[in-house]
Length: 415
Image (cartoon, rainbow, N blue to C red):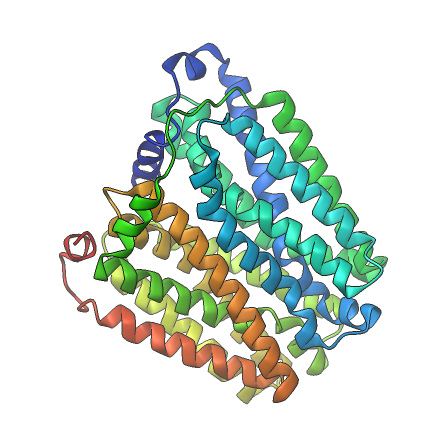
């Protein structure tokens, strides 16, 4: 995994070209503290993005909308982030990346405050739109920033530290938000996440060095990458896998509540989902570089089994919990597999590949949660699990279309 992270960091250095003295003049402690500040930002962003998943029934009831309509809280930031990911990098030019990261953190804080005090669902969606505006740009810059804050030989560890913010958000952030909601209210959960965003903003303001840039993505880079059939098929695969997950995961809390899980039990299940995902991410990293296609196929297959089995075993709380944990194992490993896959698909255009990857993921989150919401309102919550299963099955077919067992996957993807 570290080799892949190092390669990604080195590729991103061409986009965010840092003078050598920036890393060398900062003390090692300050450099690592600046990395921690970005990791805290990652934790705050991911927690805020998926906080509604654990709070959806309460918010829907309080603001007077159906659970399916409430799913727009996940759809809206996804749509906006899909635009802001490439849009920010196309328009950023030579603006100091430090200023951009600070501005994005301010937007994150504002989003949480607007959401926390929203008097209506329309205002809530405005707050979520502000999140989307910040989200796409943050992820396009975050990994590139890691390689600039420390010496080059430590770039992989810095990137892994920032990614740990994502892991801890899954393991701790979303379940903690659900727990706070149970003690107080869903509004208190957004206030808590806003406080976390404020901590990240303050840390970045004090610790991030100047991050000047001499280059930016060109529109022609995006067009060149999309002209390749393997890249287009890879992006379709990413969209299907993330769509399979989020068309169902957005409504997992109502599904559990419908099947007699108490709020503490739901919090425990979501915590378990994140924890096993963390373990799966660590475990898959040892095999993914040598067996990428097989690893991805296996994880998506587990996802498929979990999604189609859940409606069948809904009467058994123990079986439901086991399937949700299996789901957590699958999705804990899938993002790493897909990010490495996309790196192999765009070795000569890494920045364009990164921007498109973030954009496609956000489109999949938006469309998946929206379509799932339509299905929930029209047919029922169990039906959206079948929808996720169908998308997972389709994604398996796309993965297999690259030629299962082919030892020259990198060569195929780079064409």
